Image 1 (tube, helix red, strand yellow):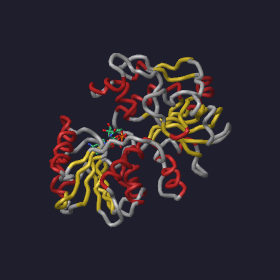
Image 2: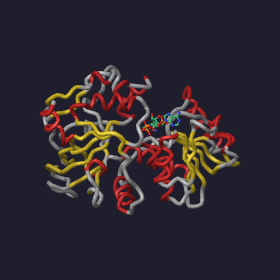
Image 3: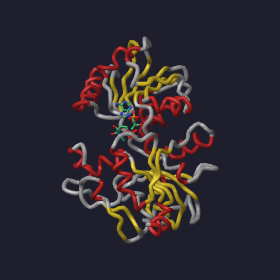
Image 4: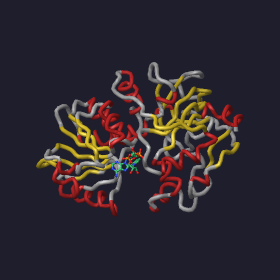
Length: 328
Ligand SMILES: NC(=O)c1ccc[n+]([C@@H]2O[C@H](COP(=O)([O-])OP(=O)(O)OC[C@H]3O[C@@H](n4cnc5c(N)ncnc54)[C@H](OP(=O)(O)O)[C@@H]3O)[C@@H](O)[C@H]2O)c1
């Protein structure tokens, strides 16, 4: 099969399209013919092993796995002996475990617990949205967002941000989203009650306070957002923040039981894909697709995602591989 193979850390130049053996599913796994995958910020971090300490997880000298890519959507090709939930031909989507080979390839093997049947009526490229939603959901679960709460989401235009706006809205919270000018209409269309343009207005001086403030993109800080928090309110982040301060603040909050700063780290995918499918089928969650690239041009997708300017997701159209390779 063709796959985007990464054998050493570096820039997107190290990503190569190579022929590699088609994987065989273990007893509890399913072999999927990938139609769509993504490149996201997690892949970019793994590519460069950034921050440096992540080498402890990714591999000290070189990546432990050779194929990246967390989100997948495609069709079941075959199933392992103990995988009973799906059959060949089923249309499925989900999220690969981060320790084994990923979906930036024509085929991937995944345990059946990390996937679900495709949401009714969705195309494959509309279903590769699990990773951003997974992190967004972890934050909202951790803060226990409920109907009637108020939440300000900073950096609401990225994969995590667009997912968080939709999931927060579907929890019944009043959402204020902070984005650049070109994304104001997008976040309103996703359900934000109010959209603030961080390029023309100081979002910390809008004269309102919130139950929760979330930095969804790692570009602000607790200290900057402090005046936006009600008494006893929580600041949450998806990123370590400047000089890793969110980690230190979250540890301090945990030790003092103040819940002032939290840095949620999601663990188990189990059950989450089925939950997301239900939100999509209820019309409360959809993919925001910024760009699409064929697998042959995946290095360009990495370059674009590394700019930190994508809105929503960047899709790899794996099914277009043969066609585009032919055109090239
Ligand atoms: N907790 C975890 O395990 C985990 C997992 C994945 C990712 N992350 C981290 O979470 C963060 C978000 O990930 P993501 O995938 O959602 O990112 P992303 O999709 O790359 O987000 C990019 C978006 O952020 C906006 N943005 C850039 N600079 C901004 C600024 N100064 N203020 C407000 N918005 C800004 C960009 O639009 P404009 O430039 O037009 O404003 C763009 O729409 C990243 O820092 C990533 O490292 C954490």
